Length: 277
Ligand code: NDP
Image (tube, rainbow, N blue to C red; front, side, top):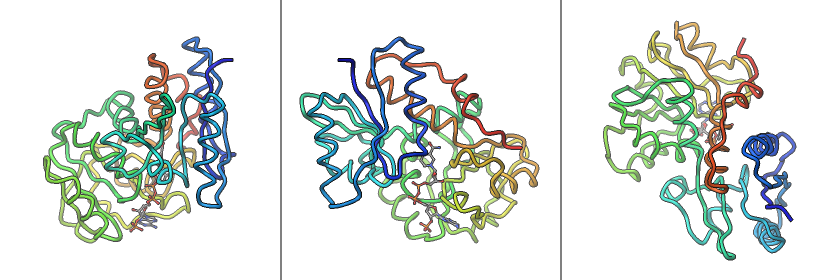
């Protein structure tokens, strides 16, 4: 029997992960299967049972998506530093019955920005909108990319402050509310990591934060020109991108972790890209 992998979430019908990992496997000639599993929402321990059944049946690893990232964190035997800071897990590998947990969302995001978009973050001013799970996952990889400063703005500012406190002041990392952004000048990179775009909304970010030579990055993907990207474009920003590259890059990180071989991503990102215009 070939090696078995899966993504688990609920709902799961929208997932692109089986397609992405299938293309990776074909490209790197790995003998494996990758399926989507709709995880049970209740009772509370039914998720754990589903994962353990998959392991018992010979499963080698799993990706985890909403709403199970925290549940997966709780059931893991071992967690990476990134997963621990995020308090959330998006990939697991199973070793002799033990669950080892990772979070590749942040490294996938940084790789997309730095390698695919060719926008190195070192020495740059970075503004992150939102302080939810995706930001928690992104923070350590962002700090490792050594920007001049990172500002995290959130509607509920206490959440952003708590996150900054938890990470500690490695480099210049600050938290604020949206109103304070008016006086903070321009940023080289503005990342919309709120979920506002999923409902067609715009976080209350002032256009003054954008720099014409900079980059505006929308974590949501497949939605075309979101209100955030439209605002950035009106502000004259040259480089705008959505999160499809992050999606494929986090998948590539998991694939490399599981299989020991790194797949090429460019053609797959192109294949999955929904044009922004
Ligand atoms: P969470 O639910 O954990 O966090 C949501 C965040 O959005 C919070 O900071 C919340 O602020 C903020 N928010 C929601 N609505 C608004 C609004 N109308 N105005 C301002 N702020 C708002 O979500 P995640 O962190 O998991 O996901 C965030 C986004 O990232 C989603 O669009 C998701 O699809 C995308 N994503 C993309 C990935 C990819 O591979 N491309 C991977 C993971 C996520 P508050 O705390 O004040 O309520």
